[in-house]
Length: 458
Image 1 (cartoon, rainbow, N blue to C red):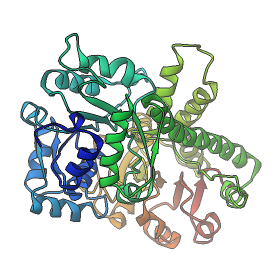
Image 2: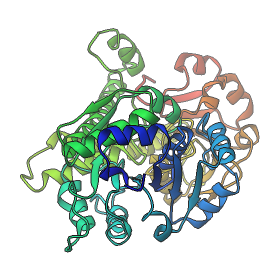
Image 3: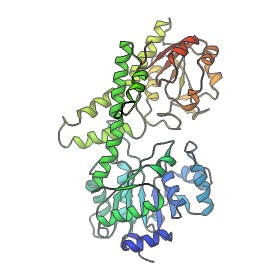
C-alpha cells in the first residue's frame, strides 16, 4: 500500500497494523518516550526514536540501555535492537516525512514563574508543519492542559497554508501516558488508556494502533481536551491529598499522635485512599500538573482552584519544615547546624528511581549549605557522582562514620532494610531525622537512636 495511514479506511488500517506495514516515529525518547518506543517496536511495528540529545541517541544505538531503573525494558531493548525494529536518530528531516504515525512524548516543565513551558511541543509542531506529509497520524502523549492541543498546537502544525489540514488530510489526537517511573512495564500492561481525537477517524485509528501495542482497556473520550482533563485530574488529586496528609502530620506531631497509626486505621474504611507525608512533592508530574490546571483557570477567574493553590503552598512548604525539624533536633541535643556533619540519605524525588527532577532534596540541601552544614550524600542510584555540587558517597557504612546526624529524604527499598542498631553502632552521633516514616520510632529509640520522624510523636 502506498497510502499513508490516515488516507486508509479502517479495515485497511487494521490490515496494515497486523502485517506491520506502518512506520512509527516517537519524538522524545526520555523516561517515558523510550519505553513507549520499545513497546511499539516489540509489537512488530518499525519504530524510530527521534531526539535532539546526540549522546542519548548514540548510547541507544550502541546497545547501551539508559534506563537501568526500569525493570524488564532492558530485555525488550536488546530484543528490538536484535530484530531491527527499533533505532534512534537525531535527523528529523529524514524520519518525519516518511512516518505513518508520529508520537509526541516531550517534556512539559514549568518556568521559574511556575508557568507551564510548552516550548518543546511548539518547536516540534513547527517541524511537523514543515516536514510532515499528508496522511500522517499525530498522537500527543505528553501531559498538556485542556485546550492546548486545539488552541495552540494544531494551529502551528496547520500553519497558514492549505497543505496540512487537521482532521482532513492528517489525523491528530491524544493518548496521555499513564506510566509511573520505575514501574512503567507494569503500568503499560495493566492501566487503561484514554483516547481522544480531533475527529472520529483520528480516534478510531489511534484506538486500533494502541490495541495492537498495549494489552489494556482503551477508554474513548469525547474529545482531546476531556482526555487531557482526566489525566490532570488523577495526578492533581494526589497532589491535593498529599498536601492534606502533610498538613495533618504537622498537627498530629504537635498533638502527640502518630500519623502512620492514623493512616493504617483510616485505610480500612472502603472509601479512604491512603497518602503519606513527606519532605515535599517532586518529579515531572504532580507539581507541574497542578500548575497546568492553575494556568487554565487564570483565563476565567483568579478565585478559581483555591484548593489546588493551597495544596501547592503546603507541599512547597515541606522542605522548609524539614529544615526546622533538623535545626530543632540538633539544638535539643546540644548541636548547631553550622559546621555540623550531615548525611543526606536519598535525593531522588521518589523511591527506587534515578531521577532528581524537582526533588525537594535540592531545596533542603541548598538551605543546609546556606546555614553552614557540612553535607554528605548517599543514594544507591547516584553513587560516585556529583549531585547538587556534592560528590556522592559510594558506600553507606563508610558514609555514616563521623556524621553528626542522618537526614532520610527518600524511602529507597535499600533503606527499608536498615536496622536501627546498625545506625547506632556506625554513626558518630546517633541522631536521625526521618522524613518518610521508614524507621519504627519505638525500635529506633530502643536501639539508642535519637530520632525525629515527620508526623510521628517524639
